[in-house]
Amino acid sequence: MDAGSLNPFSNLRGRSRCPLQEQILQRINSKENLDRFIPNRSAMDYDYAHYMLTEGRKIKENQIVFSPARDAYRMQLAEALNMNRTRILAFKNKPPTPVELFPSNHTTSVHPAKPLKPRRHIPQSSERTLDAPDLMDDFYLNLLDWGSSNVLAIALGNTVYLWDASDSSTSELVTIDDDNGPVTSVSWAPDGRHIAIGLNNSEVQLWDSASNRQLRTLRGCHRSRVGSMAWNSHILTTGGMDGMIVNNDVRIKSHVVKTYRGHRQEICGLKWSASGQQLASGGNDNLVHIWDMSKASSNSPTQWIHRLEDHTSAVKALAWCPFQSNLLASGGGGGDRTIKFWNTHTGACLNSVDTGSQVCALLWNKNERELLSSHGFTQNQLILWKYPSMVKMAEIMGHTSRVLHMVQSPNGCTVASAAGDETLRFWNVFGVPEVAKPAPKVHQEPFSHLYRIR
Image (cartoon, rainbow, N blue to C red; front, side, top):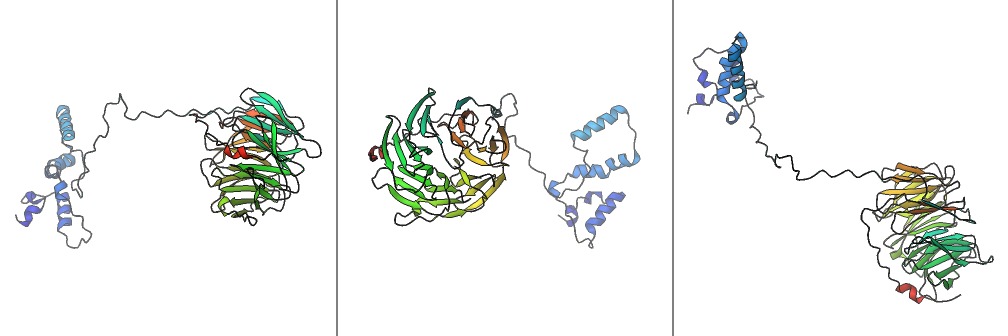
């Protein structure tokens, strides 16, 4: 085959060339054109090229008028032969014919569209309101807790009352005499049966709620009132006005097993992480400390792993995230008004949101990525936030004084709040979980060895 046979326009030799042909041949034969575009012969249609350079070109230039029937025939022929193109040369292969991955029958769908989840209704009024006379209007105390047995405990002055959510019955657990009272904190043990009661005289009492009897009294932990407590299995961690944090093993006679020193003023909040490895503490000195259980030593005061100093007011509200183990939310008092999020592995502050009012308590939704906060002056409201955008989903009014305490039912749906207006309100703010999970079995052995020491 000679070189001329490789030229797609070799069959035009000996014929008169139109100006378009001359331009193309000059471009192909030009040696000065350094940025050449070489056509891909295997991708070209020679019949179409010949037609466009001869008959097709004459028709367009001379504007030959055909009869309507003949004109319609030519149009259909051009469409059938795909002659409505304008480009002659081809520089790359045609793309492969698309493969239909799914059947063209649209009557049945392989992947039916997922129905949109209906927007949850968030009630703006409480489901139930109970009187809470003599509830102390003190920001630093923790007077409300909801146990795993679905019983809520509230301290009103010198008396601790129990409200059973299953039948709405109320009973009195204990009334402390004036020399030791008032009650400054309450905290249910993980088994939902035993409860710790912190007192103004620095002591802590342990009670069996089923038999309404006192099991023992923990003394020597603090020098002043015990305003915050948190359980970690058989370890009861207490925080006092003296700035001390103490781990008490309730199974043994010498119950003080570890101490944590870092705060200079009263301990307002204590929360153990779900794993029981990290403890978060908040104080009236505007500090948040993160302590690691594995690094604790019984021989000397334990050193914190992170000292968080970004808040500018007392920190009472603390909440560990249920879906991210190293995420902690903290809320500042009236001089701070922010909710801050911390990576407790690195100590980094991930976000800070100005709420505009005193943050008294924080609760994570166990079923959705949401955070609920309760506030003091000026609105005394509850705010539901979408996490991590921190967009307000709802502001819930009802209390007429600062909402000091907020706890969650065992199933994570109902929230109880207690305020300085001496009312206890119940809110269905977190909705109903899609799939009810069975409650985990609680090992009660650690509490079977409580010493009855008064």
